[in-house]
Length: 213
Ligand SMILES: C[S@@+](CC[C@H](N)C(=O)[O-])C[C@H]1O[C@@H](n2cnc3c(N)ncnc32)[C@H](O)[C@@H]1O
Image 1: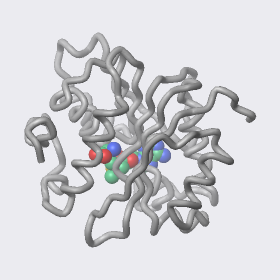
Image 2: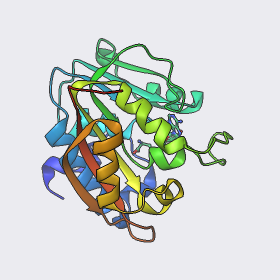
Image 3: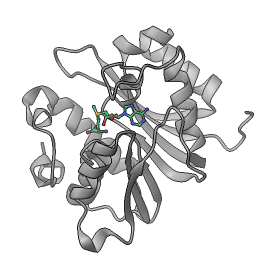
């Protein structure tokens, strides 16, 4: 990994992400964050856990978002992110609770990020004990799109094994659905190989100006 994309500069990262099996995932996430998270933009991270994605943006890529909101649906994760916020960041960085399955947030962002398998964990009954209805994936992705300004960017990944549950069967079918049902244009995508698991599709999409929903 180049010095620019050196995960050791990031203030906190759960241990597993330092293992070699995650090298491909981390380096591709860095590349997409570098390309699609711009300075002076309102930026939302969904499912932040310990805030790793936010810290990659600030500590390593040295971006200067206008606002950076780190969110999760458990109080524990929100507190965990907050623990790492530096005093001088409190003017643009906020942490709060947000459940992307039923978000209660009346605003839109230039950039919405949902990386690290957030979409696939939404229905996981082991996760915060929430058992979701059928269609969790579709509904959560629609909710995420609704938080993106028209013309703004959504970055997300999706594990192909889990996404089959809702018949999102392969990358070309997923991309077709994104265009057809979510008003998204795919501007970049790449497969991630994260060994021991099935592959993951990482996508950068733009919300269309001519929403029809
Ligand atoms: C594997 S972690 C990824 C954390 C972080 N994005 C990263 O890449 O390091 C997935 C996170 O998604 C969160 N999550 C799961 N369902 C969610 C939901 N409905 N709304 C918001 N966050 C959710 C979990 O609490 C967990 O912190």
